[in-house]
Length: 196
Image (cartoon, rainbow, N blue to C red; front, side):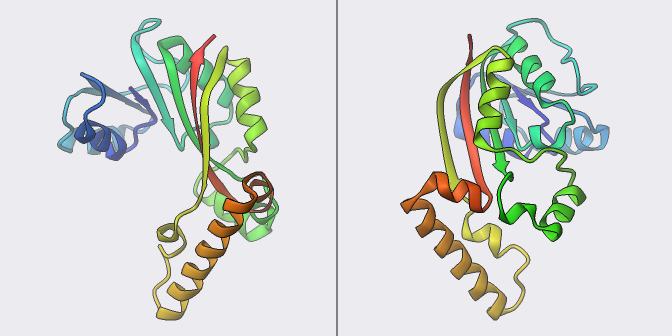
């Protein structure tokens, strides 16, 4: 199951790749639910709206809960993570690690606020939230933002070149010192958690 499935893009990708016999999505936005329901979603049993606090399913209803780019948008990430742990034995979390020097700049904070980020996590924050939600870490990984991310709004050849150089420099730095890079600029972070 995916919590915060939005328009169903990730569910579509998971469905196409094959893991899981049946998939299900939960989303706050009725508009996003309608968009997701209109997509071809292989093996997706249902897309449902929920109140953001309590999922309308029983304890242990799913093998895996996925929260991809969700926790940074909610005021009480611990509560949502605990709810995921209630309904699934294993929880996958993906967040940007934005508690860093670059992301603290006023323009970056304004952009994060504009897109609805109310949390700025460091790796330790996610670990602490996981433990508080009764989950223990199985695996974790981080990765610098890909070149495609940096080039998304680059409309000129000069802007694309600058974005490609920025992505390349960041990737090289990250390979040399990944934990240091997490303190300097935003990286993607994912972890797999199991109920304790």
